[in-house]
Image (cartoon, rainbow, N blue to C red; front, side):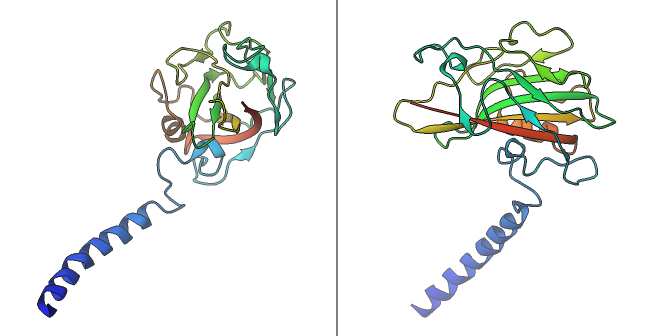
Length: 208
């Protein structure tokens, strides 16, 4: 038995070393894809430092406040699936474009992407209510997680509790971030990291 235990220990040790090395690779200094920019934790500026802060507000709902049903997806009582009004403070010098995202952070939603608006000129500091579908070039709306371009409002599963819909605005040092037509939260995180000069967010809450 002693020989078998020695052999087993020799087999486990290399695995433990590999596991330790992987843990180091996935430390907070090198975040795992999909766990980064939407919370604002890991997005960095070009120098690898923390971006400046943007102040984000909405006349549609307050930060940490309830999202009215009108902004929800069809199927929710009173829903019109209209995009919310959003405003943000002026971006810093050197900004070449802005991005707006809305992502559901509830565990059951798995970072569901509700809205991605890219190539917003730095001179633009707001999006009007119900702007989705009528934004002028160069502004572009990518597909949300439903596979449709533009805004897709909240429609969480009944009984899943309150969901946090995080609105994030990024000021980037590039004009056209490298994103697929239907980006995931991980795609967005990777595209904005090391390009974010400033960012800010607010959170709307909705549950059924």
